[in-house]
Amino acid sequence: MNILSASSSKYMMGHRHDNLVSYARWMRKDATPMERLLWARLRNRQLMGFKFRRQFLIGPFVADFCCSEKKLVIELDGSHHADRAVLDQKRTAWLGTQGYRVVRFSNTDIRKDIDVVLECISRALIDPDLPDDRPPHRVAE
Image (cartoon, rainbow, N blue to C red):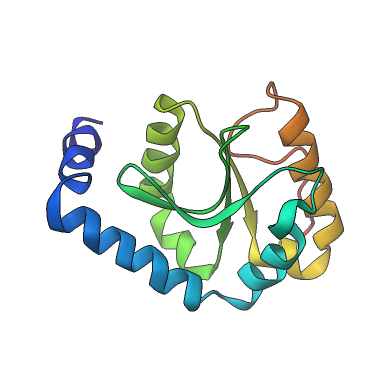
């Protein structure tokens, strides 16, 4: 955990922060098809009137989607995340220390039934006691 805490101050100062901001901007322009699909349903306060941001900078990380008002991070995990489970756990833990809850969905969840995903996000927005890092209902793979 110290590694993440120590590096976060470095990201917030100087060129690393600038590079992370540039990276977030690039990620917004180069969104995956599933990110674009979910963003089309979250943008402009379409989900229960809550404002979401995409590729949002939080400390040393870029969250796929974030509702700052509810401190809720939505992460979409593509096939590359299978190799990054430990890093994702550390990232989720760090975000938790900052007061954020993380809900993850696979690209398959989005593709198969985006309405169920939106229902899960809606529940997470109104129920802060839902467990972190797992939606109340997952769409079968």
